[in-house]
Length: 232
Image (cartoon, rainbow, N blue to C red; front, side, top):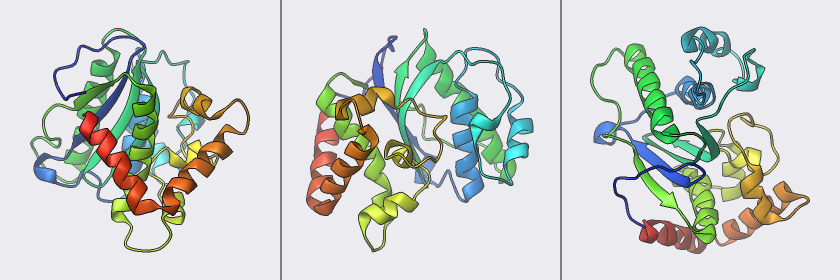
């Protein structure tokens, strides 16, 4: 696998990522993360999106739960299998659902969030380091490693303490929803990935596997990074 210009195809899965221009932080406080997550849900729609600012203002002083918004049924551009937001970058696992779905979704997401961020912090210019990067995921083994890779990303911020405990306190990823602890469940489509862990008790099985990897954190996470980055 290599990072190159991608011709996106329906029903194919892609690893999408980007970071702030000059490696700057793109999330500086909780409300920034909440806005990006809100946009992940709200802008994933072939139809015209409702007034983002209006709905977001209604959420910003409470727990962000996109599923609470009253809306017409969405026609998805992509399925979001997993995500993580870090201070200066993000990772997404997307499956394209409609023609040009990935490009349309990422354009809406990047433009909408950059406008919010620049207005809030009174800045101008590009927020992200060029166009988002994309990698076709065409191996099941790579997909499982990729999910763990993005879920374990926050451990780079952990200054001490048990890794599993830190991940369960980190809200800005899909990890909690995958282990059955409701966080932002409306954003992700998890059945496809959880099917790799059996037909029953799938969240518990994924949780146990993640804990097994985390028991030998340094070795196993290093192995995951090597697999993901080498195949990139």
